[in-house]
Image (cartoon, rainbow, N blue to C red; front, top):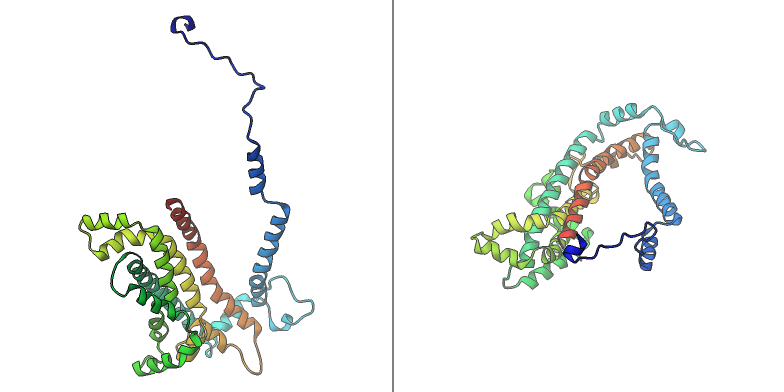
Length: 303
């Protein structure tokens, strides 16, 4: 057959003949391979980060009689149910209502911040209008004002509106943040091509429909990160709820502050409340953490 077709048969490669690898490949593989020092550093970092949470759990399951022992107990006890029952029954703390109020406030602030910040970020990044740069500077200037300087005038506004002691006083002033607007503006300027917006306009889409159907899906990675950070920040907020709320309508951090006394500190009760207040944050992180990381990776691949 080789004589008819005029094609010379290819000699079979000997089993010992293998393609040689480039010398640089081994160096690159060794560069990306973790060393034992890397694993030791990671293990120490995880241990130092997780030990306060573990110690909080240990104290929450013990009694006050053994908390001050030397050496301290390192294994959990069997008093967690009793401590949680005493915590929920404490009238001064009103802990159950504090958990509910914090869940409502943190969810509302996170959703509103993602919506308004992404909408404003899209406008600053992709829309052309007079005074755009000046308005962006005003938004950035709000980030330079410390929160402590705004407590007194903001409290006076809440009193004028009749919102002192009400949950909306914790929600409405933080529906949008300058950091969120700036973050969304920076991400939208890179993740959303101008050609995509022009194509949507040619198809007859309105500006809000372009934002909802084109821009918002592209901003999903940044929106997920901003929503998670905003939820955690609102959940852990203490100073402003302490100033504007009262013990009858607290947030979870306000309730925890009511557990401390000037004469006696029930550490097991305080740590049990801290444990319960930490569980929602861990649940939110574990439920949405993979989606956030996946969205970030998807945005990186598209870029």
